[in-house]
Length: 196
Image (cartoon, rainbow, N blue to C red; front, side, top):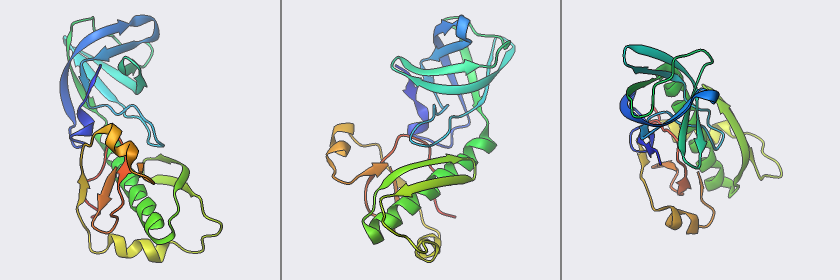
């Protein structure tokens, strides 16, 4: 199984790892650890590069599998061999924008839950753009309710919790919270450190 470095430090831009499996026919490798987020819960996957033995390969995407995080290369890119030591670097500009968007969506989610008791029913996002669906009959204006949450800026608290425990919390949604958004949320992706 791949160690998920992004869960404990969303700000890692580069990491070292070892190739534990190669699927050359589908331009894919499995690493022992990664900072590349595979996507999920509406958040997009990371892109970047992987360097090894003087080669540089463009990573098309990371993707979840039961065996770990798959690292899928663009067709025609060199692929490292099994056991090879590699260095991965994420597309930081893309990741940072995704983290800001994802964290803002948590704040919106928390505010709507706090003020209306409504849960998220769906959503989608890309860098600096997102959409959330809530189980609400009618919602007139949210902006005036969200603005006080963001002003003044506050820290985002991220904790790694036991999965079984988090599943027992009724009404939980996805994992970051702020001093204004106190309900707990489950999430495994990357988050911004504050609302500034």
